[in-house]
Amino acid sequence: MSELAKRVLVGVPAAALFIWLLWLGGAAFQITILAILLLTVWEVHRMIQHTGYGDYFPISLIFVLLLWNPPFIPLWLNLSIFSAVTLITVAAVLSRKSDSSVRWLTTLFTGVYPTVGFIMLLNIREMGTTIEGFWLTMTLMLMIWGNDIFAYFGGKTFGKNKLAPKISPKKTWEGFGFGFLGAAAGFLIAYYSSASYPLALTALVPAVVIVSILGPLGDITASRIKRIAGVKDSSSILPGHGGFFDRFDSTILTAPFIFFYFYALL
Image (tube, rainbow, N blue to C red; front, side, top):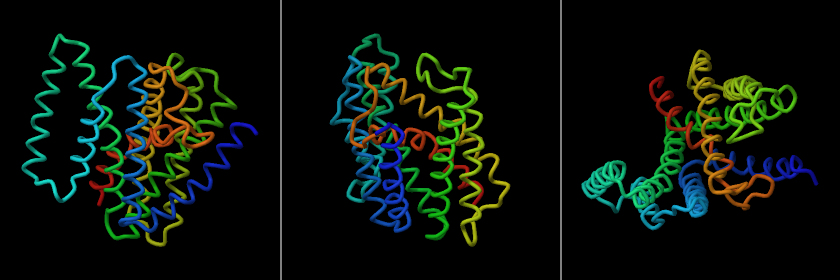
């Protein structure tokens, strides 16, 4: 079976399940995202272990918990801890003890980077009414999927000029350009599928630019980590797709910016 066939056989049912849980919203979607987040953090931790630096994984999990902000943690305690984390991070950046400084920064990356992305995805789902939140989140996902599909086939058919040859050799500028068309197609599918879409059609252009630039950048960021770690995929949980970090690398970086863009419009 070809790699593309594996991706389709796993990807289509997985996407359908994800959309169904997204439609349900509420606790079902929140628990799903939390599970994906924890698996993603574990995958990033495993890759960091292969870089030669490692991280303080229990502290990364504490970052996840604090950012998730469960009601049993008082606000003053949360703010106090993050103030201390900020000071430690500044000290780590300025410190000459490179090994311990890098280990702290990788700990911060492992716990914070994926967590912020997934929390912002949840925040998009909570925007407006239940139906509006569903379509806004679907817009982001359809744009990312469209960007990825068009970039893949556009690059495979017309690609000649490498985008990031030392990090992700298969990516091309031609594929990057086709990705804009895919993101636009994703937005239009969401727009015309909704009986009362919460945004004007003029919102398309900035959204396409955000997704089509930050999505590939998130992908390249993940590829850079994997290259340093010497691994092909973040894990092998999803046959033909690798791990959850591989599947959501674009979403993690794009979701915060799309959230603030949608928030400004609404």
